[in-house]
Structure formats: structure tokens, C-alpha cells
Length: 388
Image 1 (cartoon, rainbow, N blue to C red):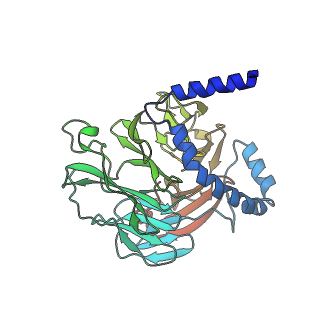
Image 2 (spheres, rainbow, N blue to C red; image 1 turned 45 degrees about the vertical axis):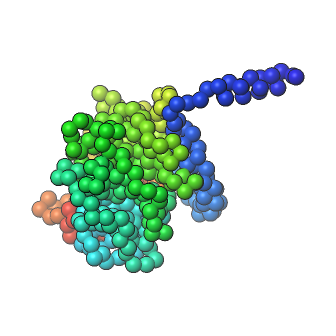
Image 3 (cartoon, helix red, strand yellow; image 1 turned 180 degrees about the horizontal axis):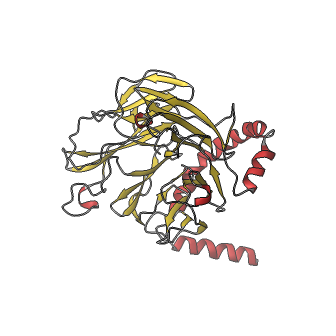
């Protein structure tokens, strides 16, 4: 037996002897991403042709850490999703809704999903009428979070968490919106498993079910993170339910965002159950009021630099490079920052007249920093932007 065979045999024996007692998100990440890589490879081939004519301009933007947005058109900023006045907008399409929106609006591959006041979860596909899914009439405790939903923009998987009087626990239901069916049995996640003793709502003071991230697995299930008080928990169909540690500022499958006591933002690989996350980058001058894109590539939040007040900072979490999105000329400061699918950022800007409630819905591409004014609205307070 040569030296290579000896080393390989020793490593294989060592690997068999070391069996983790709790799931490692790195393993979860690899399994979740396998099917996405296949889709991404197919997409890259098409995108490369489209991007060939603008790659020089985008590279120049990325080299300049003070680069700011450009309002030009027509540009591709992904698929903006928003709702106002009973009309749900998905890209260029408009869909009148019979139900009002009461909780989160979330994009999925086939359209968008939102929660109605009666607890119904409404799925609006891009190619058909709205559908009611998850319409169980479970009573909610007064302090219980509303049922959601949360969703994966790269699939049609959604998660609904609600209080059930049948078993006195919080139950999680998973659905495939496009197929109109529930994924597996409803899973109880409350009671003695976690939470503050005697507190009917262990999830904190939030109007929305605290599912922080969800992604479809290639085995038909889903991986999701949820907040339990100050802690972060993970659930996966293979590993079950397990605590991860203290809740970070924001979380995706691959990247965690944390903030230090002096306000510095730090981005790490996902913290494992057996090991801490590895630091990717750390930045200052960006407020901890923002969010990670669903894939964790970007963080967007308000900037803390008075020299460029009123802009949105877009941070590359892997390098720490920070670029800026300026609101349209003559408008007020941006509000209600959110992510739609992919790297599409959305926000609202009021008109410069302080006495008016009118304003604009803005969508930007975080890769190119190109933005478009999606719509002018009479009252920006009536607009709901997506929540991932």
C-alpha cells in the first residue's frame, strides 16, 4: 500500500468515527444548493449574452465604492412586487384582489403570496385567478403572531406558523403554492420544546410569524430558520428541529449578519451547530436597519455617513465593498426598504412636498445599481412591499 492509499484509508476511518450529534448547516446548504446550481448554470448562459454589452459599465461601478444609482430606462430590475388599493402588482401585471392584505407579501416563482385579515393565505399566480390556501380557522391567542406567510422566492414553497387551540401549541404548515397542496403533515413547534415559560407568545412582539428564512430542498422538503425569543432555530426534513444559537441581525442559509456594540456590521458564513461561522467581511458606516438578499450576497440598509445622507448602502457581504443607491432627484429620503426576488431592491420615496403623502415606488438592481420608478402613488402609506 503506497502513502496515498494509507492517508486516504486513515481519513475515511476517521470520518466514520466522528459522527455529529446535531446538523451542520454546511451540510444542509450543500443539499439545498444542489438543485439551484443546475438552474443557475442554465440561467448564466442566457444572462451572459444579455450582460455582454454592459459588463464594462458594471465593472466600473463595482470598482468605485462611492458609485451611486442611475435612473435610466428601460432597464431590467428583476420582477418588482407590491400591493396598493386592492391591486397586486407582479412585474407589469396587475391583479385585483377580493381580500385585503393583513400580513407579509412575499414573492414566489409562480407569483406572490400574502396573508388576509381572516387568516387566509392567498396565492396569486401570474397566469390565473387568486387561490386561497391554508384557510384553517384556527383561533389565535391575542398575543400570538399572525400566521404569515414566509416564502422562498426561488421556488413556490411557503411556510405558515399559527397558534392552534386544538393542541395548545404553535403549528407550522408547509405548502407548495403552485401545486395547491400541503407538504407533509402540520408540525407542532411550540409548547415545552422552547419559549419562555408562561409566555403565550415566545416569539417576541411581532405582528408576523417569525420565520426568518426558508428555502426549498432538492428532496421536496424545505429548510427554514425561525426566531424564538433571542435564539435562532433551524428545521430541516432530514435533521428535524434544532437550536443554532443567539439570533443574529439577519440570516440566510449561507450568510449571517451581526452587529457589534459600536454599530459595526459583520458578515460570516452560517454558524454551525458544532462550530462558529467564518468571518467574510466587516463594515462601518452602514445602519443595522437593513436586510440580506435571499441568497446572502448583499446587505442593504441606511447609510450612516452624513456626507451622503439619504442614500441606501448596498454591501457585498463577501468583500465588504459598499455602494450607494440615491433616491430620485427632488424626492424625500427612501423608506420601507425591502428585497423582492433575486437581487431586486425595492423602496418608497415621498415627494419633496412635506404636506403631501404622495410618492413613488422604486425598484433597483443591486448588481448594476440601475433603478426605475415603478409607479407614482397618491399615498405611500397604503403601499405594501415584499418581505422575505
